[in-house]
Length: 237
Image (cartoon, rainbow, N blue to C red; front, side, top):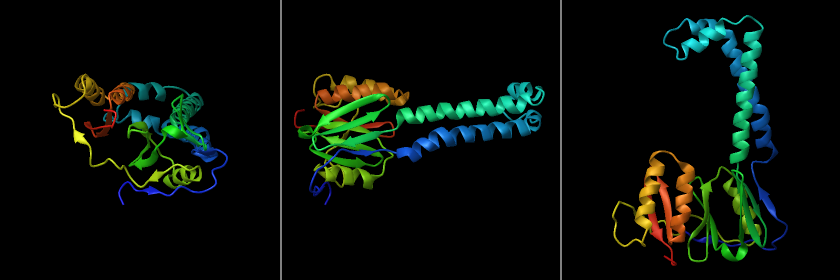
């Protein structure tokens, strides 16, 4: 049944942490620098040939690298490639989502921020495509963020602690597409939706996330499909 909760498991116990684990960190901090160094080695090996092909971009840079003597070319490209891999690893570690589910609260850590919700405020949990969503008491969304974690592990963690897990969004048929000037919105919502549409258009994700929170304070839940915004009103709205 759409939106039907899976029965909660018995005997809530110690907090359960769901994350990419040590394997994910090993991939970030071992795999990406190694891949970067490998790319640097390939560049050093073929830089003379690449510098001779006019259709390859960054010709000035390639010619500069090709003019360096050995072993400076190989050492330099290996170092730059490995450094690039470390930068990617740092970004990946910063963006990774870590979910801690306890009997009395849910803690979500991502992008240097930690959000905590008491059990009393979490009415249900579900996955909406690649996003994790926590619903609140009046059907507002307490949390909606991209999530690459295993749905099975998340489901088991929440059920083990007594949280209702829904098969899908129970309000998926309640959303309406927003267009400028749409009547029936709370005061100020249309202006916020216009600003958020501009943020989506120009890929300003932090602005879009902040405006989502402001709309939530007005009783609106917003979901995105491409650059289109769809909304529904909560019971508070």
